[in-house]
Length: 600
Image (cartoon, rainbow, N blue to C red; front, side):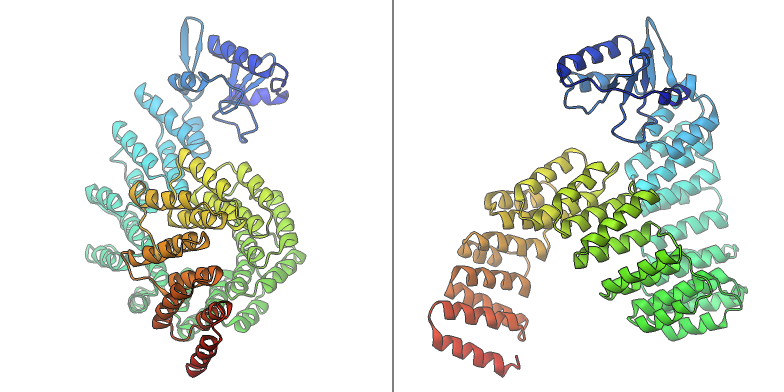
């Protein structure tokens, strides 16, 4: 580690383009002949632009992913044990030499790249070197941040191998990891194997079910805890109240309120805030207001909870009045008010409030930035989006995967596809939302081939597309006339990737065939659907019939639409246009009369 820090005093140089391929091969051969002459930056580099290996004397750099590399480099690298530096006839372990200090191991596991940190601990376990408990906690928290269930299970296995599986704190963290990574079943298994349960372990498993909106089981466990003689504290109450708020479980929330009064926690500010949030999200603003007014002490969270409640229910003026009456406002309360405007379609007001926020010297957090970027996307406010991008860079939020995805979406929806791709390429981490945002951007611009290429890259890099991704790619194929590719993708989605088609996928396929003029195929596709087509699917076919002047299919699609939505005015307009284009004026008059009869 010390070596990697020391090298930062000098700049690095990449091989020059002249003879670069030959020079690159020479450098790699030099590296493999004596790796001790090179700094290994893979564990500590913070940007993909910095080299993976840097020569200690010449400062030339090597990148594992460089397109200039000889074809044999990757396979050779993969055979080398990560964490080892070989020199001469012997070898010494980088793990033993540099990370034998427990604090260093813990820090690297908490702050370093997850896969590299995990591999280091694996090497330590193999060499019977005991990693500290904090190292495992850091790894588990890294898994939680990335929703990395597979890596979390590897950490669990290492904990068992190290004989630390009886540690109560680690078990509680394992329960938390499995819950946050989406496996409540594994969380429950760990909980059930614990020899004894205290308040903290009960709260962890209750939280696991609460986070997955399984409120009935969360309440059941809550009651079991009480029967076991363990009285809930304010943290446990807040956990279950949040679960009730998430799915608007009002009756359970009222029961908890009663228990809170009996337990004497009603005067706690954090409890009052949770009760306000629960009642507000259940649509009971009167009860939320009553709790708010009865609180002996209120903090900024209390006010923000009420503002959020009013905003979510559409009472924007009430929310703004409450916001204006706050003695002090933090970034969370500003964000809540901005989000309230955005959620109610008042995007210009949201951006205006952000300007006021800046004037008062309050800096946005990543949540504020995401809400504002979405507002810019909806009204194509490119200049405000660019200014916000600048603020994001200054604030250091550009590495946040959610912020990055929102930036990609904003630029794409504002028509700046090159800017969107530049942001996408610079993201240090991408999730399925990031990939989908970029693919959707290509779809909106009618760049079907680019969307398909990016989908292939996404799959190669190990990110599994979801149903939204496939809607975007199918839409891209439709707008680009890539019929065969779209049909192949739809079949592959179902057979190879196990994604069950939704109504949106079926509508995309009808649009794909309809735009290409294959109206009979589109109609046949609808007939063979395993579920009944909705009005959107039939409207898609009706629109295609209008574009291609197909009277019979247009009439059939119209009949199907009005059976499902008798007051769909657009359907009458489209059919009238089809008849008009065909010169059937009598039918135009007739369909207009029919529309008036149904009150359109």
